Length: 266
Image (cartoon, rainbow, N blue to C red):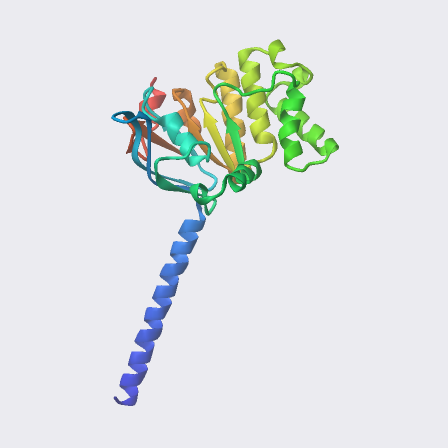
């Protein structure tokens, strides 16, 4: 092979290596921006032949800093999907990668630590402690996160102020309305500035004004703090706050980027 041919071959190999390296880099960057990556998630309930298949091979990805709504009719699998991708309920099949970690390959203690460190949960049923005041409800989560008493108190009071509950700091759940309990639960989830926020019907007990305040707080968490929000809801008003709407029906994803206009009209 002459000198020109050798140089040409060398240049071709170098170009190929460069392109291959660029492809690997692009793939790595793309993977790094995914906060959640669920593949082939299946879940059923019941025994023997009498089983209800709730999730039927669901694939779902959510990027860092994204607000994604999961919408669909009652019984479509929304809440089960949220539980499976947040580490609260083990699926029968499939894999869930959250912040680069395979959730269902973790031992239970490691999974608990992961949720405590990285996740904020907003439940439809509030899940408040009957004996604790609103401020204590928030402080107890921050305590497990290792914050000092002074820092916990300051963060709890700010989080409750953000949801309009400065006047309810020392009230226990039996002295709070349903909407106020929901706002305490939301303050508790946001106070530790989690990287992943999982919300199940976060505005179900709220009027329009407070619902908008809560969604704006979730949006601020995403856009200013880089949190990823996955929210299950029936509330069409929330469509305006979402980056993307995912629809689910009969245990299957029917759209990963639905038109918000079709929900806004309701």
